[in-house]
Image 1 (cartoon, rainbow, N blue to C red):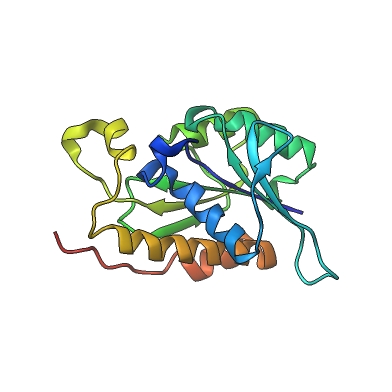
Image 2: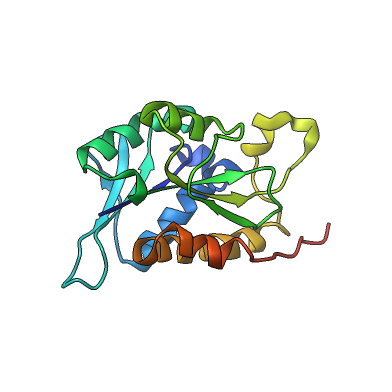
Amino acid sequence: MKLIVGLGNPGANYCGTRHNVGFEVVDEVARRLDLVFRSGPADAGVASFPSVSGERESVVLVKPLTYMNRSGIAVGALQRYYRIRLVDLLVITEDVNLDLGRIRARRKGSAGGHNGLRSVIDELATEGFSRMRIGVGRGDPKRGLAGRVLSRFTESERPVIDEAVGRAADAAVLFVDSGIDEVMNVFNQWETEEPES
């Protein structure tokens, strides 16, 4: 069984913000697999895809409802509840330090200044889980980091992000079928074009 977690903040106020790209990716995976999120065993929205005659491994998609900085609470609880091995966990989040639309997958690593990842690392007591970051651009530097990640994409940025969300959903499905190494081989090389200002 695989556990795929998209990080973000719950509620309409955060919908469409840079911080919620992880939610957008798991929403897209759920749409493709015809799944619906429901209240889960932890403070999270959960959608599950049972294995059907060995076609694909069982998948649990997760949107923690604990808010970004406390994401680890839900992730840790679900990892224990479903008895997920760390090699079978993928956490998806935004990255303001990656170019808009760029995807970077890693087998393990630090939080890199991301509070949601820091919470997951703290709760699991390890950096040894796969993560995929989606570049959301730097936004308006005058707003500070919190203001930037909570801002919405501009009209010219949105198509780039929509394409990146689709590619990240492809990467998440590839993770289920082939693991993080294949995701890294295929998706870390992808180049994107910056929108014109």
